[in-house]
Length: 383
Image 1 (cartoon, helix red, strand yellow):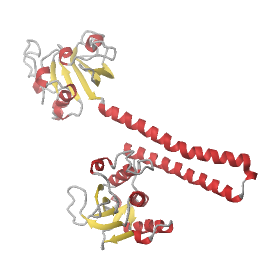
Image 2 (spheres, rainbow, N blue to C red; image 1 turned 90 degrees about the vertical axis):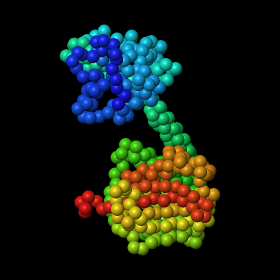
Image 3 (cartoon, rainbow, N blue to C red; image 1 turned 135 degrees about the vertical axis):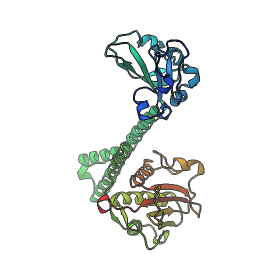
Image 4 (cartoon, rainbow, N blue to C red; image 1 turned 60 degrees about the vertical axis):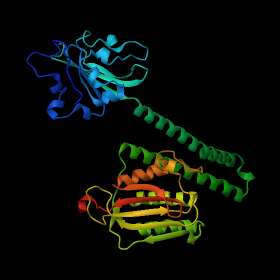
C-alpha cells in the first residue's frame, strides 16, 4: 500500500498509530488495500499533509507516492481549473465554510495541461467541525473521451446510414403521389419494391442499435430453448440457395453426437446469419461450416464435451493480421465497403451473453475463419 506519514511534528495525533496503518474511511475495516482501487485516491490529514497516495494516483498524476507522502496537498497535487486558477486556494477546504461536505466531480488540470476528473469529500469530527480528513479521488479522462468519441461515431454512422434509404423512400413516395397516373403498373411495382427494401434496411439498422444498447448496458436478454444448431445452419444455407447461390458453394459438416444445446434460437440465428453473410459477401470459394462438440469455454468446467462449436470459413483473401484485433469492434469493415460495421460487434455480444467465446483467424484455405463456442447448459429451472 502506497501510504505513509510526514515526519513533521503534529502531523498525527499523539498516542495514535501512524496514518500508514489507518487507511481512510472503511478501507481498514474491510481489509482493502488502496492500491487495489481502480481510481486514484489521495488523502490529506487535518493539517493538509498527504497520508495516502495510491498506485492509481501515481499512474494518473505521474507523481511517485514516496515524493507525495508527507507533502502539503497543494504541493503534492498542484491542480488548476480550466481558467488557470489554483484549485486548492480557490476552494480552501481547510479554511472555507464549515458546512461544506465536498466538491463535485469536475475537470481540472495537472501540471503540463493534462486533464483529470477530480472530486473531494470533507470528513469532519462533527457536522460543522474542523476538517479531519480530505479525501480526493482522481480519474483519467481518457476512458470518458473514448466513450464520447464512440458515441459521436455511432451517431454519425446512424445519420449517414439512415439518410440514404429515407431519401429514397421520400423521393419515390412523393413521385408516386404526385404522378401516379403517369406510371405503368411495372414502374409502380419497381418503385414500391425499392421503398419496401429501403424500409427493411431502416428496420435492420434500428434493430442493430437496440441490440448495441442492450449489449452495452448488460441488458441483453437470453431466452434459452433447445436448439438444433445443425438444422439452424441448414436453414440458412437453403435460404442462400433459394436466393440464387449455387448449392455446391456450401459445405456443412456436423459431428455426431452433439450435446443438447440450450440457447436463444432467434439470437443464434442472428449470429449465423451475420457470419454466413460475411463469408458469402466478402469471401470466395467454398463456405465451410463445421459443427462439433468441444470442451466448455468456461473456466472450471471439466466436462470434455460440455459445449458446441461452430466454425465458418471461406477461401477468400482473409483478414489481414493487423486488423484481426479490431474485427469485433464497432464500425469495423473489411476491404469491401457496405453495411454499418456493427454486425460482428453484436455477434460477439450475443455469444458472450450466452457465456460463450468467439475468435477470428485464418482458415486452412487462406480465407477468414470465425469460430464461436457455446456452453450447452440448460436453464436454471431444469438444473
